[in-house]
Image (tube, rainbow, N blue to C red; front, side):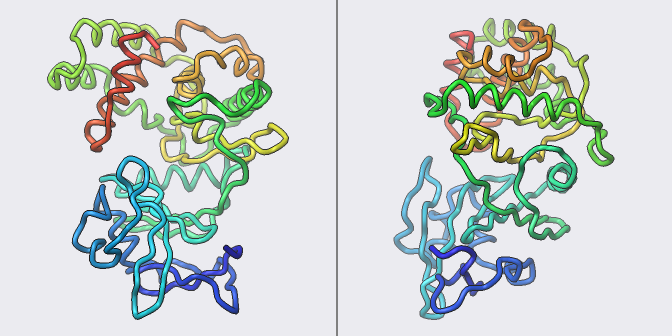
Length: 322
């Protein structure tokens, strides 16, 4: 498809014809009442809802039950929008080379906006944003491919993981900007509350929960710096030269322990930890990385369950001490 050649219509975005528009014209006023955006925000399985079903009777099913590339018909015109992800807290809709993020939590949206305007790493460009009860944030596309996906072998060589470690260090030595001088969102949930929820859910052996919670408590949060807060490998994009071309999803950014970012970066990919630390170039406590890995896995089980996803991968990882 042509770059940025899209015109907003009710229910989506018309495919480009004989003229293209500057992507800056695709602004919040045009998208505020867009039916696809509303459907993506309000429903986890958008293609199963009455609203979306009316628009797209034969919506193409994407990974994990999300809508894939869908073509609703509105006013006898074919329109196109991609639902990248949609759950109870957030939706991301792709319109051409523009990504529209809708969040029900203003704090997350405000953190991301501050980070995208201040952190010294490659990142998406903020095209426009709109505050309100459901903030909208329009971001540019980032070149490259993810460093890795959870549960899948990384397609990138060791040098890319070294580059990711350098990027993490560059972030961690950067002064904390105004607006991010509060605890990273990973620190908001108390470990004791998380442990109680897991014990009540009876999804994981109680002894295993206690073991990983003990490791997490031992890690604590003492090396406080500016952190990404969700620096998973899928959020780090790598270009053809093996360098970091962009870091995505800054809504958990704030003050946290540097070991937490490094743990999250290598969750599911522990074989790349040495490469990450080589790039990081600073003395790191491996035990604390292990503790924060346990913390991340425990938290992930709860998040996956509460958002309607399969937590079996995280539960299996807890059993195997990964």
